[in-house]
Length: 140
Image (cartoon, rainbow, N blue to C red; front, side, top):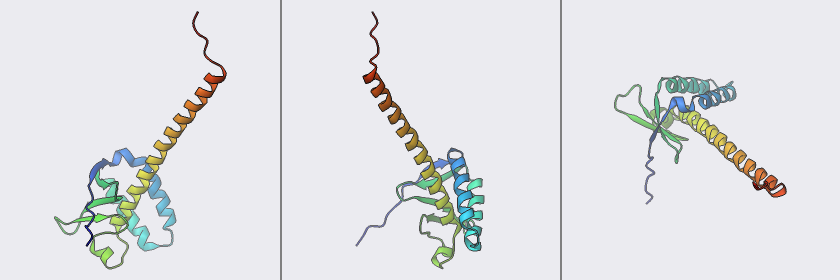
């Protein structure tokens, strides 16, 4: 018998990832062209994300936690799956769309940090090679 995965949520602010969220939404919206159900889910997710100051997110499981808009006190957890009734009935749900947008935004942020890190390492390597070829002169 397997133990269910219990996400551990942290709060991230929308402001921290806003530019990356915009990029993720623009890309997703263009990819959803021609699919009215997903376009609608993306638009609803985008509206919800814009209303949030913070987003409850579990990086390990790429999940968000969303309060139900129609059932007070009910909380849905979404990543590739969702605990909402729409998903249970095989419909496109905006909670999954929101989770995917946040994931894409965070992946973009992580990629940017990795690129900066790699650039810093590359600069350090180049500087080490320059220093080896042209040792700094010692002060007399």
